Length: 254
Image 1 (spheres, helix red, strand yellow):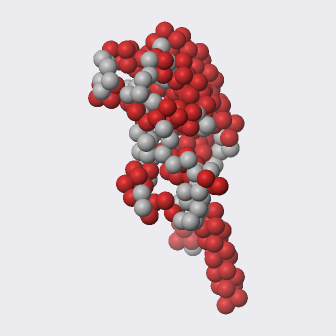
Image 2: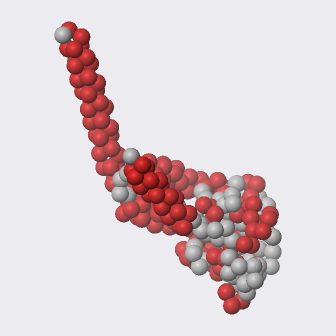
Image 3: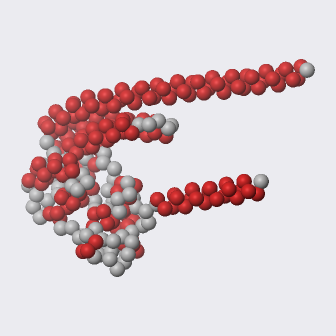
């Protein structure tokens, strides 16, 4: 018995240690940059494991080399360089932004990525970013409202599929292929917002909805399978309970 307990304890310790090893330590930057760190911890970048050094460079684990050019440190990027910096990850978004009136008409006070998304408190991209409060800071809201109205139906489909795919993943289904296609279509859709061209967006959203319909079909197949599995489980448990009750009654009669 003691050997068994020791073996279980050792396995639990190894499991805990392996989990800790995978967890990336917080960058040393947050010891000084408290406000930026507080914002970052509320961001989609934090949720996805994007740390200070992924944007600013430097060694996140050593104060002596945290701001060393030898470790790629670039510090605070200049305003004109921000689109290219963000574009290292958000390639499609940068491409569409560069074609937009936001970039073409940009001057030293013009909008770039952080104007709408903030520097460190970026949220998951969704249609709510089109708001009178945000867009109205720089110009009239009418064009932004037309873009929002053109995209809102597709955004609702995206939100619904996102939730259903997460449910399937939680239930243990292998949805890697579906998720990859969905992310590709969703990202293409969200990158459209940066074109700021109502006619182009209206034309593209129709094609995107067709692609989302194909994803929806694949999701429905798995959802039907999950529904059948749950029904079988209910029936199986019902039969077990009925059997247990029958045995109990039989024993009582005896």
